[in-house]
Image 1 (cartoon, helix red, strand yellow):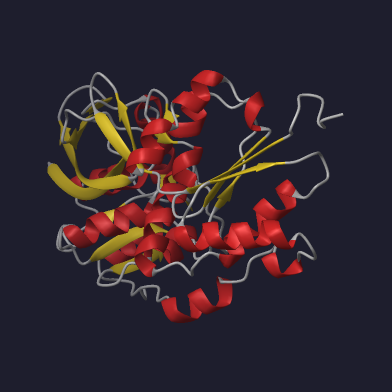
Image 2 (cartoon, rainbow, N blue to C red; image 1 turned 30 degrees about the horizontal axis):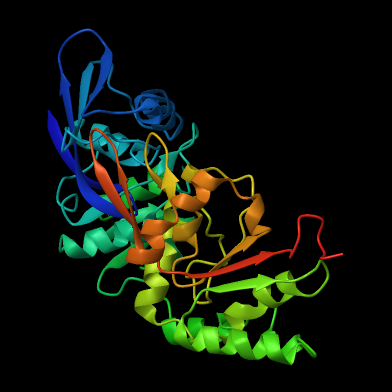
Length: 358
């Protein structure tokens, strides 16, 4: 039998629809995954088999073929565990197909059937909305992040049995609801406030002008003069973030797994301070599967480069495109990805290699 499950995958900082097709045929027991799966996706067969058995369902000892469409884009991550398991149970006749086309299904399975958190639930919720599906079934720990998107149902699930009962209409689950207005009010406080700075009137005036106009800043002074202290408090005098800015910044942090359970929407201006030993790929992004770098994590916020002369020349050279265009384009043989990088650059340095002019 054949079943089709709607799911999603991350490409850059955006998500796209993936159709998980599962076919169970007669023949010697085998499990084959096609559609350019990477390591974690290939390993899902062992997690899925154990999860189905330990959740109390019968695993079909037949030839199972899983196709991840579109098949010309590489798939990575463990988020296909749950849709593959649901596809196998649906093809086996355990799950009714009525509600399968209404939801995107994503999640990583543990061996006992529990559903573990994933990365990128916010972009996936946006993709589900764009595809006009009813909602998204995802790990309960990621529900609040996906619920930020209005117009779809973000339903959190804890284990495989819960998903099966919900799809068979034997269990009712309530979609998560988030009050965005109260969320912005509660989280608009910065841990370090510009109001705490006493003295340094000329520097504070310069930073206020820079913050008002979005200008970049270079501070030169001896150690202990307050360069880092002032820079860390600069985000607190920047304009409040809008919802669109918050969503853009959150997408970057979401795909990198940097959102905690209590912080599912970036509502304060980001502040990033990479060490001077950072590589060019770490600063602007890159890798086999291109990921955002520090300039994208500082999107709509402040990027602070302390000890500017200590940064390698090739690292500083790659800053030209993001500073001019507000975005970074990472080109690979198979794909080209663009990451947002609109930030305020603040750099600090000593007036002399020894630290002072003496």
